[in-house]
Length: 90
Length: 511
Image 1 (cartoon, one colour):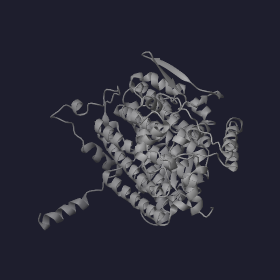
Image 2 (tube, rainbow over the protein chains, first blue to last red):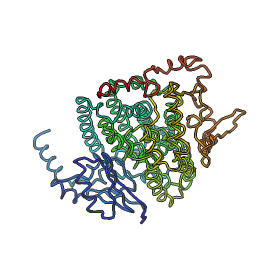
Image 3 (cartoon, chains in turn yellow, orange):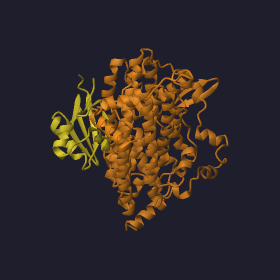
């Protein structure tokens, strides 16, 4: 598996804050960069967004596709299921 | 229907296990497709073979987002509601007065006249691509993208219309897009893509532009809009960008799909990637200038953005595609050399020809010149600062410099020939080719290669300066041409002398 950098950029909004926190907690190898109105999270090789982690923070069910509402950009191949959204290079 | 049957149906419905995301997407993109029988498939889809791309099995197409129509409408309507709530608030509260400085608004003028019409062109382009491709997965993705692009165009027009009430240069944007000399740069870029076949179009726009290059426009520039207090623009920008992530994914998917289908596809795709990288990179010259010169508060320089989004993130992408035999796009080394010069050269062009542009230009403030010197230690003080010092002197003496001539344009990118040699910033770069006894001129090796690949296409380019000389732009004098552009006196010229500036001073109490 490649170590090349993947990233996800999300809007700096209330809806996305728990998602960003979940990503930080689940991806200790990631670097979180804060820009005006935007948060860009870079990581070598792989980034995972886990439904369970987000739900734990917001106290309700969360559809992984709700990411669509705050997503700005990304890099890497996507593997999306009901439980996770994973970015990785092959 | 009797109540009993309805109840029985509801019970069956409840008993049926819920489809997984993957199954739902498969049902949408496989079960809804069929092969035609009244007419052969090749007659129904006459355009998806002539480019030489060989597809053995359209079922190999996968959309990683697996977005179905019901989810698509649900999320899109949610995005629209959020966006329009913010636009309403922005308008009600005179948000235009909260931007960092009225100079910033010129970036929006360039956006509305140069970028928004491309969103509309993309809407048309993806509708055509969707109609042309026989694979259902590809057609569904193109359809969603076509609708997205129409949304982007509409939300941009709607948002920016508020600025039109207060600032010059916005009022006749659609007319300007078809006629104004520098707007032929974005217009011809997109028309080049739309007049290609469906596979080339989708490689050009979804992959080369959206995956490899648009992060440079929508990430640092939109973040810059937020930094400059423009709540409306950052909101439409990021709302559009949330669709863009899907489009980028389509771009990567289509390239992988074509490469996996047949080895014969590799050289065709590599040629398209080389061509469309260079075409897109040249188009981004306008963005480089927006970032370094038109945002009074700056998030990062063009050079830094290029390093992050192309060299680092784009580099990772091409490393990944190497397993298919794809290499980095040709002339990426030249783009790397130009990163120290691109925005300064571009701003110089607009400063020279500001009497014929729908944006204002200016010499940056002293602290801004220092910022540029700090971000561009290898080029700014040596090559560009002396120019600004001289222009400032001239303007202060009541002799604001404007270039009385018409520039020579590159046959491909249509930008005035002002770029310098990759290895010598004191020498303007000229390239030349002859075709059927005619001479053609280019700004770079990249643009010359594009011409040589399809000369019969590019000899037809509508070059604004040639058209003026041929008498097709309203007349032989500058006032006649400006009139034909619909460019009003208050739309153009130096910011220092503009009505925009005078109004801004009055509104913000700096009179």
